[in-house]
Image (cartoon, rainbow, N blue to C red; front, top):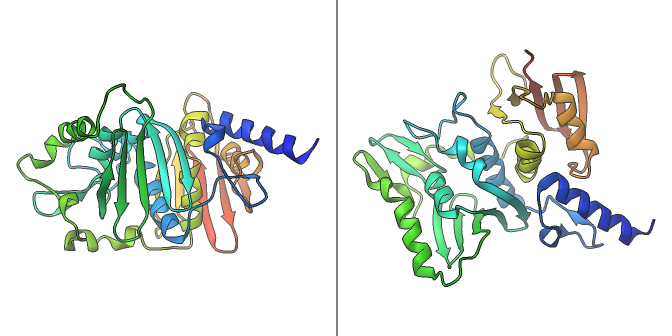
Length: 287
């Protein structure tokens, strides 16, 4: 089989694994498909995004609002995600709704929800461009379905409607500030580069494989006195996807993380390793 045919087959397989349009898949210099295209600063942002979005109502991320759930349900609106060298594209039917959940708010003068440092940089009639001030990372929320006759003003009106609750009593929209505010700066450890950053960024790039192809909703847990490495934890769910299967998908499937290996402890526990320092424990709960 020729290299061209191999590449075409790989792109087709990636479409099946990641629900991605073949035309949007980035390629390296030799023309082969590539998923991990983020530069260092973009990678820092995507790594933080992964730990925020890989949460559930039962295991809430600290950046969830005091009531309800925002980050933990954002993934339900995603259609496709694509990592580019200087931006992370999310194709969705509800760009403004996702933005309303991700943009940072201050609750009762002390608690921050959303993504600290995230700002609306610009928009047109179907794309919201968000910038993360501390890392310089960029997130583009793109409406998958273009509405005939919709204008830039219509799109802004939709965003205003979705963010109307951002000025409710006790809430202050941090995202309207052009600078990073002290309440956000205090949370810098969430986006600081760590040894696990490359793996977290790679997991974010493959989130559709995890959420949709395998049907699991994992939660991120930081290292602790009882945990030697950060842990991606989930209940197997209807598909009964255990850690060993996810480990194989991330290291042996068409959507593999280049250079990553999986060290299996048992069916429900193992280490995902990239290089000499980037390690994440995969753990599926048993019944």
